[in-house]
Length: 293
Image 1: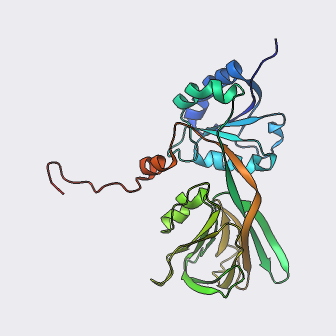
Image 2: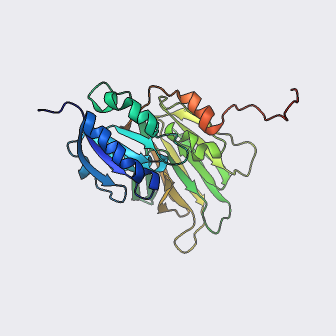
Image 3: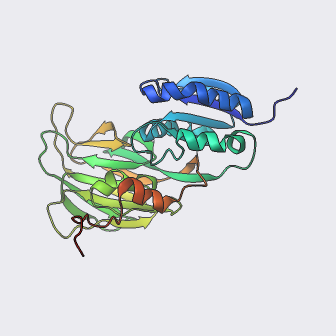
């Protein structure tokens, strides 16, 4: 008898006991409604495990889903996150919701999929490109040890560069707008918007405010003064990973990557309701019991 349903790769973050504990139940659901073509853990980085899969189910938290998006993005296979971590902002299903929706998700019905644009980052040193990479959340130039102010020049679409002194700059996608960008005072951008947000980190001025630009806009950050300390110091950070040390005179070029990451969305979940629930956006002030506004 031929099984009808999706071919699924299961990814388990074995550092999370709850993910390991849920794996048996998720395997049962996949076998009941689809076909389990393989299982892997988050310690591996190769994408070969997803060969033949139509869907990748990831057990963990938002960080787990982010790392697996990097791992499998170039394959174009949609990823479905089952949150067994803390926040559960990107991983839209908890175990109960996944169980409820398993027949539709795994049985071959239409999936609700949202495409998330990534950004590219390139570091030029003189005439040489010393680093090139891709991020889903953000590209950050951070001061680093010994934590003195750094100075950057920001050029947008080839225009004259505004200078900023501070602890660095965050350039984020809509996906990353609720991460470091938000902590730096940047705006929340709905995932479907084709845009990039630019926010300074602890700018030594009241005049530098976060901005939003079209997603296709080329952005250039020139390092006018860096912290250079024994191979550490100022650095480019992609999605929370330090990927390249920066020196005075380096140029970081940021643009849009044309290959999106595809995430399965939970039809029973509203984005702005999630922002309010998880991040407490627009939460009313807490008043003393019995008091009046």
